[in-house]
Image (cartoon, rainbow, N blue to C red):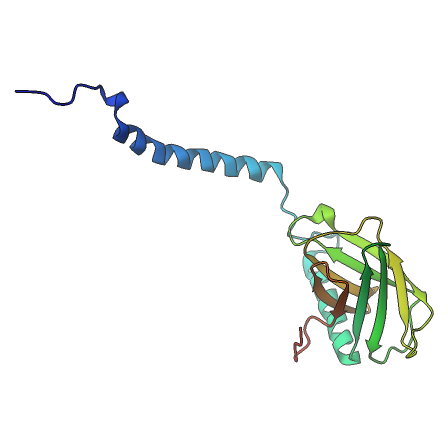
Length: 176
């Protein structure tokens, strides 16, 4: 009998190919474990009041904004970092002196920002205007909410454009 294969098994291609498949799965699994240990789970917002209370406040603020017919137009100036918010519709009984602009990053809670916008002179149509300033203008995708304490809240998604319209999140005729 003549033997054609004279190389030992560890010098063959196929045993190493078969070993490489499960080995790559082990490496990928260990990498996933390492990544999960290095980062926090920032998608869940925790509070002292409890998450249900925070969600209920947010929903009631969005309902009130919807009932009042509120919407806001934001103008971002990337060069100066200035933000101007103009309330375009709605019947606000009182015009607040300050508003909160909340920028929430979709994945990393440590990047979230809360800015205070102060009332400025009305625009030419008589609509109330609030202005604020970024320390550094964020890049990328953000969830934006403009609110007056826990009273009302309008929201939208910002991806770096210079103008953005915010509306109540639960508006039935969604015109986004």
